[in-house]
Amino acid sequence: KQEVTQIPAALSVPEGENLVLNCSFTDSAIYNLQWFRQDPGKGLTSLLLIQSSQREQTSGRLNASLDKSSGRSTLYIAASQPGDSATYLCAVRSNDYKLSFGAGTTVTVRA
Amino acid sequence: NAGVTQTPKFRILKIGQSMTLQCTQDMNHNYMYWYRQDPGMGLKLIYYSVGAGITDKGEVPNGYNVSRSTTEDFPLRLELAAPSQTSVYFCASTRQGEVGNTIYFGEGSWLTVV
Image (cartoon, rainbow over all chains, first blue to last red; front, top):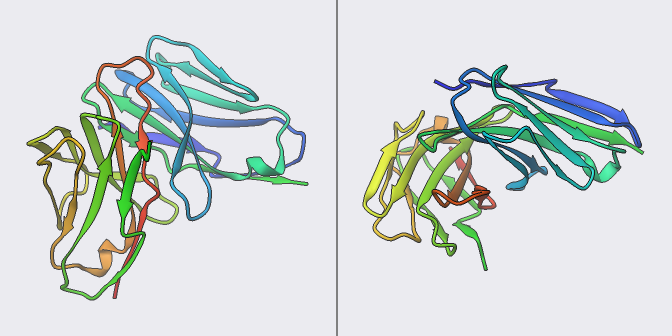
């Protein structure tokens, strides 16, 4: 069974600082890994998707890396802004198309 | 496109009542999922479907039933509601085999069982 862990559970940084969010998974036989953002009381918004054959994906200030062999992914958010405050969820998609989620990292960016 | 649409958004049920959460997607996705999210926890898979007429259990299927008679619709039925089913429910969909096959989520359904 795939287990997904996100560390830290919560993070508070001043505006402008770079954010580093970690995700680890136990079974390296994955199809892809996806990072989501969730605002309070809202659904999930996809940020980045990394296929199992890729090492990283970038979108604007966001960069996600994937090291399948060590079971790790890292989401980097450059020059954080108060609008980046949210919960970030890592989800690992197995080859049977099931999606396993971490518990998330709640980020607060202080103005 | 509307994407993934869930109804209702909020519902209060009494213990022992039954109800159906509706989910529809207009992206012609073959894979659909139901998740529940409890406070401070990750999403847990309840049921999923790989196509019309095919469903399978996830991690936490007890107390729920699903059907998939069409590609677009994947309703989740709660039978004999219990307080432990108080949660936020998310429906999601994706397409098999496409490059960059992102999973799309609905806005969620907040259910309270009292």
